[in-house]
Length: 454
Ligand SMILES: CC(C)(COP(=O)(O)OP(=O)(O)OC[C@H]1O[C@@H](n2cnc3c(N)ncnc32)[C@H](O)[C@@H]1OP(=O)(O)O)[C@@H](O)C(=O)NCCC(=O)NCCS
Image (cartoon, rainbow, N blue to C red; front, side, top):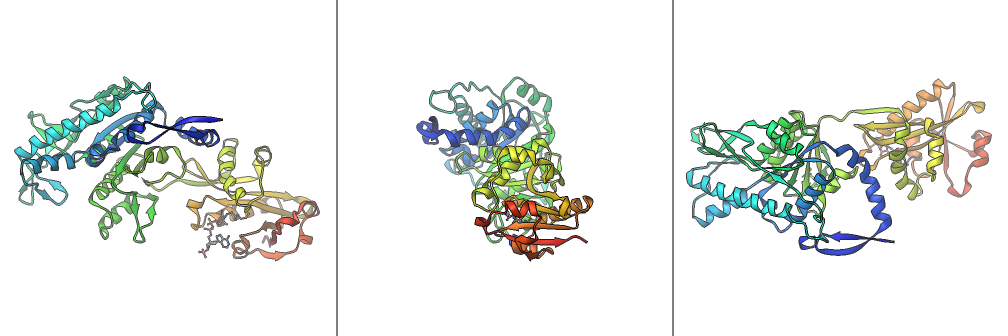
């Protein structure tokens, strides 16, 4: 059977068949995230580059889907390239001190025009409703207003920044009312002051300030790049605010846009926003992949994650199956049905990282032989090489001792050295408890290793 899928062609118009198996699987993988995100407030920052690109519509259609799934969405947009274009057309020189623009009266007029044009583009994309697009039946209300009170940056190091400003106050009650009414709230990088003037603001700062003021669950920045990269150009998948600071202070590896996003993300997290995500705006569906899959695809800025090794519980069954499945497919672990996993659940310990199961191991006692079998030792690929495998072994050794067992054994095809380096020694099948010897599958040619518990 086939489901009809929409491919991200221009305007999302092309329809291609999607394999129903992968569709159902994907939706099930997304299910826990859909439940978790419903009713939460996310602030999404779409930079000026994205606003002017032809890919704005697919990005906003993903934002609309978030809204459709019950997320309270506040959208903040940028305007830098739009302002640049107007300055060029009017032959007004752009003036920056560091990353901050000096906004004189003529530039402020360009800012007003740029904001107006950007809002019109965004509102139009969120108003689409053509059948055969992800926006069919969407009927989204976009709400804007004077939610940001600004103050001038003023004079710094002898430079008057004129109509460049910073956020003074966020009208959270006004924004919440809009969200309660089911609207997407759209905020521009422009704020009014009590003196009746308007000020040009940095969109990254607006997004961070709004996320902090609202107590948002997430700040998501769609950035000009695939995420934060390290010195070897590998994607950094997770950062603490301090690591983010060090990265910005270090050699300039990221573009200005990414740097500003990282700083805003770190500030938002320090201000109480649990997670700030940076995702590549050029990658189709990046927002959805980041928010509805365990791995995500971009960089996550978050406080030190809370990790705990604990006994497995019933609700871990699904996540455990997901963790073990790829290793079973590769033949590294023996395939276990869900029913068997459920029956053996009380033998498992898991590593719970902020609610995600990222590792597991199990111990089957053979009391008559004074031995225990260690099995299903697995750490999610992304979290390996940080001592977690060893922590699981220690926990199960403790459990084995508590059960009065004097020896542990493990059967492994690929990880013999991992266990040998942790006190296990090669042994023969004959040394296994009789019940286990009988079920030993010779075709797997697993190596037997044992460890005496002291
Ligand atoms: C084996 C496994 C659990 C280790 O988890 P981990 O959290 O990365 O392990 P630790 O961080 O505690 O230890 C890392 C060390 O073990 C080594 N190591 C990891 N896997 C290894 C393997 N298969 N063979 C030999 N050494 C291995 C690493 O090189 C590293 O060594 P170093 O500290 O000298 O650099 C993990 O790689 C895994 O899930 N593998 C797939 C499943 C599997 O093979 N399970 C064992 C069979 S039951």
